Length: 382
Image (cartoon, rainbow, N blue to C red; front, top):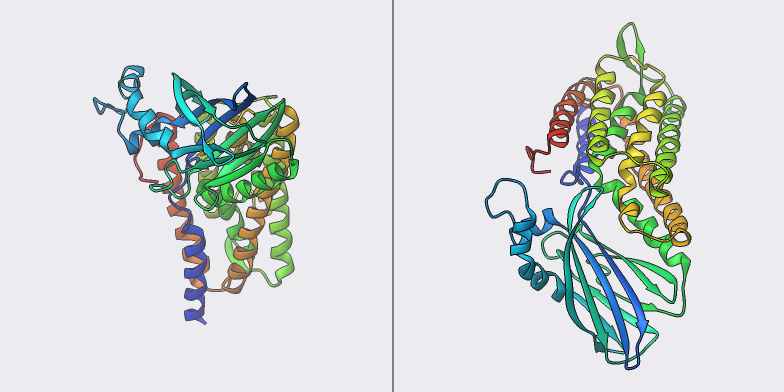
């Protein structure tokens, strides 16, 4: 039985630790293309927002190595930035490549930091209702990178998400399918929850005691799966409701919070959830913690959609798809966690190490994240 417990726990920890390298917002860039018919062929105006932190890693922007990239340093490297990025974006009309040229270099602040802004134009020698876009930025260095695109033609908007598996995509300009946006952002929601290790760690910290009950100041195994299942349902429902509210509020630009405050508060929520495992205050009422801090986590989820700048008609469907994707990813984690945790709930390895020692490790890790986010430091490689 003890050996079985170790095997189950090893599998469970392996699953949880898989997305370890992404406690912060995963790498994204934001591409906007506006298509216009010209006398000869097609004219495209574009804007490409690329995170400075990603460019620093790939080509190096911080000349004096002081940890801060100035406008002067970026301006010095702007030709190098364009030479690196633009060959990794290929646009074709009727199999004919479009000729591109940079018209401006700017800087903008997104929810997760500063981005360089490349504004460019493209002239396509042929007119067509079919556009092909190939995107390969950072894929050779970071397979988790995503390119989020907004495509506008005759007042209609389409969206797309580029990944290593979908690096080249075709678009029918006169056929707008809202379900494409819905499913693209649904999958992005699943991807986002799996890569958002801080969100996962908060949820797991809340779920760890679900297969236990507190008696005489000690944790004891629950007698039935139904008791554990009902506790999980309450926690997940509260977390889902809370982050759905603030995800919608932030994405629809009704109310927003500063990114540094949100990210720091998310780290603090993990600390408090783990502390409650060691010194139970919300015993049997962890759904209150899930709801309260779920409101903060919703603001963290919102960055993907906020930064893409979709019009209201496209934003609504993308928001629903993304939120459902987050819930699907969350449900998958619960379906893996609960049976494994329930099967080893009576063992010392679960009660003492997974719940006890594990909570201490979580507190230390989340404390470092909180200091990093509060003071804009880099202490851990993830």
